[in-house]
Image (cartoon, rainbow, N blue to C red; front, side):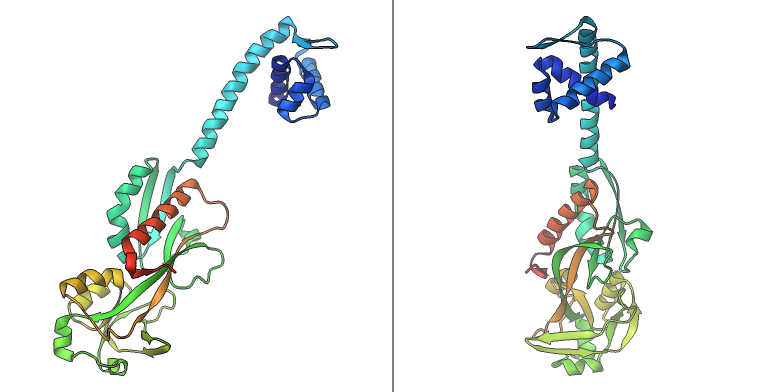
Length: 305
């Protein structure tokens, strides 16, 4: 016998004055309710109800038990309600991993708003251009660029991130401005090693259905996007940058577009979690917030169709 189930049935019988009505309220068979009351009386060694052909009424012992049962069940219901709210409310420690430029330019300036909205969440923001193993590193959510070969990840598509080929004016003054893609091999690029391949990224350009790719030589190679940007601004070579990173420097004249008639391929962008099972409320809250943030902050630099 489940003591609490029997107690609920007893309370319903007392309040409705009927086994039939109590069974309907509890969505149980009348025989089940009758059995629960009998087991409860046997357990207590006391008769709780007086039965007639028309009604059911509590005995003196039954009335005292009814009062205590109501108090106990109310406390249990309140405790379970609080537990459910606690389980569903965003709370706890959250570990997030994003690329360096995204962390510095997009997420860090907005974190205060997220923490104010969710005061029971603490956030650890990791910024790296390397793909970390989410499970091994204990990361709850990550922002990933490129294809997602890992089938263990649950992904939410954000859009495609636009890229641009550019260089500092003093680099152009020394080496000239390429007029056609094939002239890129006469130049130097800021080499950036892709986390997905461990190899330096080639310079790829598209125009309509035409696509070209060049292994432009590099005198400086890095795995850090912030270091690559600094080297590009110093004029160490031509550089491929995410448009949201380059836009400020293009507007100020610190960088200029190279081969503006051609486009650099866009990069798929996803928010990923390490499991397809139901996400914790704090993870779901962050994903909703981060998705809206990326759409708002990146704007035209993000293809969402």
